[in-house]
View 1: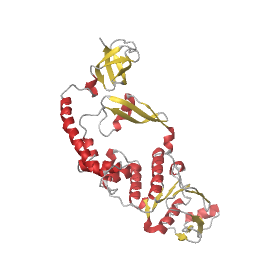
View 2: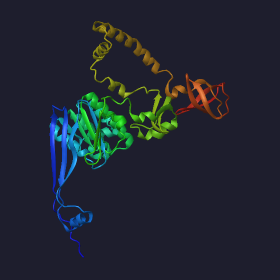
View 3: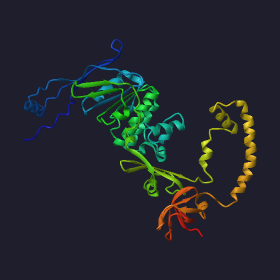
View 4: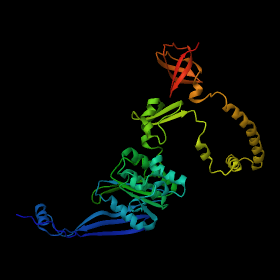
Length: 417
């Protein structure tokens, strides 16, 4: 027997919604949302109807009946529920009522062939701030185009774009559903803070229930099947911290900690003689390393850091305003600075011609003391700091030593004669 092919008739779905953008008398948004479906009659649909005792006439499915939702400026609404329970229908109803006042993450226009740092923010610093808040804070990511981003990165970019719209309502369906759960919690924490501080109302819908502690919602909607729904109203208070910080610890780090993450550095995986290393861990995994080291003689960033000031007078004026100092004292201060440089510059030039006393070369020949036995590795005290060290002979603790070479953060030493 040859089965009749499925009908290509479009299944009628008639949506019925009664909405009032805002009910002044009740002081809230009020929604009735339902839809009616009618299956086309085919051999197979008729078989299904007979097998399960169903009719093929139109049937109404109610999602929300006289549902009240109170939203205020700065509220964070968190809508959760199983897939198909009606979360998206609520956001669509809100969007239709709010019109141009709402920015919907799914309706944003994206220029896919322009670096993302050029597409958001009124200024360079604002662009970096927006992208960093949504977890796109890598130097290489700033330079990528939207078309070159992963799905998760694209979603985070659209969040930044939604915020940049500057509208009073932010709507995000399937919120953070494409992100790993650690990143999702960070983004949720930043979004909750940003919405409150911007005075915007954020409404997100998702099947995930693990973002409550980071969003700190003031309105929590739990949507069940059919008309089942539960709404909880709370005080609108920011989460004190991101929940992933609860398992984070900081300890003294090592060269191996740095090497483990060095490939992620945007400039160079090498580093000069360090002064101190710290490592950040979460659940036993190293997630960050910071190295304090001797700075190079020439650092281009020093000039860039004060590039917003057009001259020394602008810099002095800004400092005087910052500390509330009398502006009339600015010219005498400028005179003192000029005198200082007239003296300091020649002295500095003379110092440049002398033996280097800092950095890798400055450590050679320095005298210190063995803090532990060197057999052959141990710890020494040089330059008012503790160092890892190695020697070609056994050197007891307390013995005076001399630095003969430097290998990154480890000193090679010998006994002092």
